[in-house]
Image 1 (cartoon, rainbow, N blue to C red):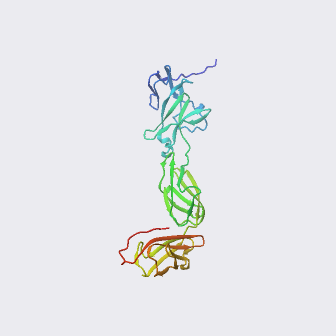
Image 2: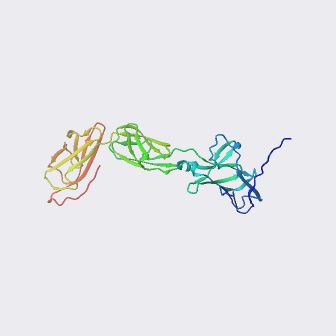
Image 3: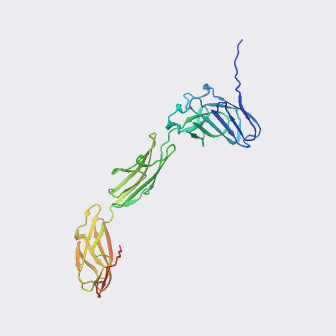
Length: 334
């Protein structure tokens, strides 16, 4: 005569429509059922899952897969399931990625909203129905990288200080900063490291600037923006006289200035032009002397022309017939 053996698991506890907690004798598993989650009382069983019912290979940590009954039981309001694990079975980095999983269609599926408490070596998550549940790591996800500035497609002048800023968020490590963040350009290579860098020496042309970030497990996230560096206007400086200088009519005034182009270098004196808004052209050169400025307030402008365009730099110069009073600090660019 043939015979079979049937094992009836011992129920872990009884939960009614009131708040209740069911826990295995050893405390490995705990189920917290909220008010009105069940319309009637239920005899709940929690037993280790049959290894034959688990996928091969199984990603669940040993000793964390449990079968919950009665089969088909559902909760109107999600219950909270907590399963403990042995820290010796996983590394610290992997432990941060442990989540509650449900066996669905023969495969483990992570429970959305589940979290790990590495200090107490347990994983918790919301459940709405009974099945086989276990604890397993989710794949390590690459950091999410965002470039805040400059804007993608921006056109910027050469020689200007450009600030590159970004943010990096990693599911396991949180916000990443420091040398794990690397900025690079397709034209100039490495630009710097960190959340923010400033560069004023980018070469003219189209740059694809990338921000890459590496998390503690080696996963890499990358974001890119395309910017175009164009030849900017020369940088001008009027060295003398000072702004708002006051002189007497007929008194000679010496003007001195410089111009620097980011690509072409120092501007030739032959390309430096001085003008007055009252008297017009005053002369060409890095240094000129004017002795016949008309009476009145002059805005003196130094214009430097390079092969691409021009830049102007001006200030107010007051001309009077009286004795020269103290100079006043005033500056105007136009």
